[in-house]
Image (tube, rainbow, N blue to C red; front, side, top):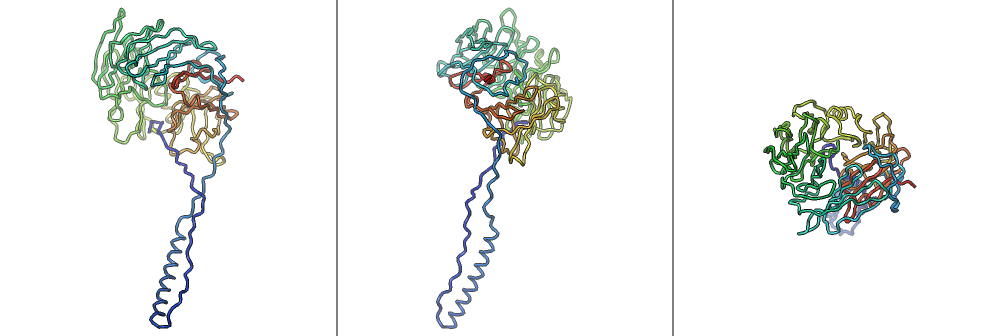
Length: 489
């Protein structure tokens, strides 16, 4: 189970309507001999048979009959994206809010070939109008290939492509996936020059870069220590090393309430880095990037915890959810609020715009008000449609209700639900959902005003999504990188 995001299994089961045959045979009279003994015996047997027949009949009446088939859910309209590759002809702007143009549907903008022998989909990074792709070879040739593309035009234009040293460790789903400095991209233990693509081996070895704050890079070994690094005249120098609680091998995990890009929280002197602690068994921890001082937040969890993270990163702190309440901490590790909401939620904010503050998240948990973003999404049951609908409440108070198409199978629902990512346009016309409950890979676009669900197998096969622009979504799949844009037709 995730905070706010618990994985649930759809429990609606269709029961056969074939009638079960509950038959009882009528007792048959048998020929008897003319002796009192056998007459009495026959009478006695007849009484037993009658008694048994009554008892069985009574039991049969008490057995449950065949259950009725659940009424069908009346789903909304659905349309499959056309397969044409149309190029990108959008606005090339990024406000970090979903464009309303998605309400008209979507199509494939373009595709790029990826390394054929890579066992993993390409890792994607976006900086302005530049898309960086990272792929690994297989076996002994598992070197990193990094390419840069200008994607501001109708088709991507390659800037450079380089192959570097073999990485010491490949983390397919680590967070952070990358950390950017002014002139470089840090990919685990590989440093990539942003202007030339030149790759060099990082001095921190197996450590995972967590973020840069105040000129200090913090890395964690994903075992039990973190270090601070500074760069002067092109040389990296260790400033401090701090022992921590046992860490997760794949780095930090966090809830989908917010979408941070690194483990850094706070700004200026009030900055901290969240340690990728194994939070299933240990209390969360943060580190002061300037001094390496470690602060532990609260106590270790009980044995009854969700499957994934309890942590939500805010712009000025961190929230730690329990089963029934959530505690907020500032970047110094001090408790600044307690909210009567646990890790199971029925409502999710959209992940547009920047990270919210602790106060904003507290208001959402207690009042359902997502004032920092475009809106919030919840699931409501409709008796008329025999299933769940999606209710989108915008930050301006406007509410839109949408009956999803057949492919969005969350409509049958269960005890709880979760989503990986939600985005909505400011006017509520367009809605995007990535992943729900146990179906973590499927993605959908919706027209929320004139209800329509847009689906595509290509979209479902893609992963590692990045938003280059408000109207350009890029993902990776086996053998290719694929971009989606609103359908202008």
